[in-house]
View (tube, rainbow, N blue to C red):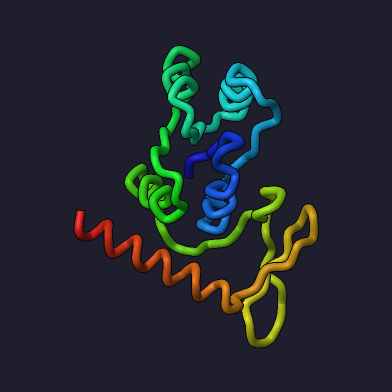
Length: 143
């Protein structure tokens, strides 16, 4: 599995990718040089909309995905084309990237972050996310 680092412009996409089972770090610094150093040190692929940062990645020995769209559904489509499976597979917290642990409950499936203790469950929002992913997967088949 790939490990990603999103820049500040793509933090919403980063939260979605975490729900898709991806390990996604947030930037520890603000400059391109800091992001490149963090990505290299942590063996992460940068996800950015910044063309300058994208162009700097090869010279720094860092993999990078350039996102062109501003709409989350189109951004997810771009990530699917880059090899990310579009299925809800939550094992990372959307807030802190900590590991999610399945909770023993009857009925609705629940998870809890081992780091920040945030709770997750398959509620109405889950169905909306599944529906959006279904539409995007359908578009992929037509490409």
